[in-house]
View: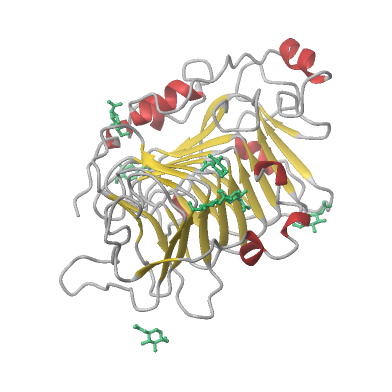
Length: 386
Ligand SMILES: *[C@@H]1O[C@H](CO)[C@@H](O)[C@H](O)[C@H]1NC(C)=O
Ligand SMILES: *[C@@H]1O[C@H](CO)[C@@H](O)[C@H](O)[C@H]1NC(C)=O
Ligand SMILES: *[C@@H]1O[C@H](CO)[C@@H](O)[C@H](O)[C@H]1NC(C)=O
Ligand SMILES: *[C@@H]1O[C@H](CO)[C@@H](O)[C@H](O)[C@H]1NC(C)=O
Ligand SMILES: *[C@@H]1O[C@H](CO)[C@@H](O)[C@H](O)[C@H]1NC(C)=O
Ligand SMILES: *[C@@H]1O[C@H](CO)[C@@H](O)[C@H](O)[C@H]1NC(C)=O
Ligand SMILES: *[C@@H]1O[C@H](CO)[C@@H](O)[C@H](O)[C@H]1NC(C)=O
């Protein structure tokens, strides 16, 4: 399969410069520069002067997140900085306590933060909130973290991630996280997020990459009301039990959406994509060039259910791992399933689906993925599942 190279041109361009560009590059025009289109809805004004911030504080509805909660560590990339704030996200992370058991909050003001961020295991729970006038969706996000490493630069997929999230018990809200490396044929894996631990939720986030955008790797994870963009294997990992709800999945070139690395019958991993939409980022993505998944390992387990599938999804729906002669197909023990999908790319309108896939009689329930008591979990924000 050939994959189109289209935004490697950005490497070395404005996105590669290790500097803050809050005024010069609002999140919207940065993301437009990256994808060359207006796929992301225009945000409202990202004015964030302290007078605006404080005047909205008392009367604002709960989805207005323009004031840092008391006790939060503040990241503010503008000059002059909010007193006591940190100009980089990593600076804010480094200011988190490694010893407290009290929940901690990192609050990120509008800006484009060009850096790689590593969040180490803490003892406490952590909430990371980006400044937004409307936390209920990803469309008004104003805080973008972006970097551009690929596997050819480092020694593991995780180390390419713009955000390496290693703390369990973490909630991310309203951040745009991008890896702008683009694409090369070998060692081009370029993660936006490495979700490396259990008990984490991502709400109203935008994740942008090309190959391997999201490493959903370990433990229980929930992604809701978010945008995930990529071309190749861009939701992948080995052992996570992950639920994706009301996600807009957008493809930017030919490739496979998921690549489950579930390696044995004993491996608990599931990826369930529920109540979501799958489409090309714009009309230039040809029909039939994307697949719901391919098996990174032979017990891959992925379900798409009650999801809108556009015509970018190929009639077969799913494909083998390698199409090279003699390459590993990895289809021996896969669970590649669908239920209740609709749209031009669904079995209602195309097929036949790959023989190693199936149509279920009933949807998978979230309790069977995240546990019977998922509603009581600290990292599960039920308001994003409504
Ligand atoms: C469509 O999206 C692709 C991939 O992001 C981009 O290269 C192209 O410029 C966009 N085309 C239009 C017409 O928006
Ligand atoms: C990653 O490697 C590529 C190819 O060697 C190089 O062009 C690029 O500058 C590197 N990126 C970084 C951030 O070091
Ligand atoms: C931290 O999160 C865990 C579950 O992820 C929860 O059991 C615990 O109560 C939380 N701690 C606090 C102090 O909120
Ligand atoms: C899953 O999808 C169904 C139907 O699209 C929706 O009613 C439900 O709220 C979604 N989420 C969960 C957790 O079931
Ligand atoms: C989720 O399901 C509800 C109820 O079936 C439906 O109204 C809504 O359009 C769905 N949303 C997505 C993103 O599929
Ligand atoms: C499925 O996995 C089992 C256990 O590893 C193995 O014995 C069997 O050959 C596999 N089935 C196929 C069709 O590859
Ligand atoms: C899920 O999809 C099926 C088939 O399209 C439909 O019958 C069912 O009502 C949907 N469930 C919900 C909760 O929307």
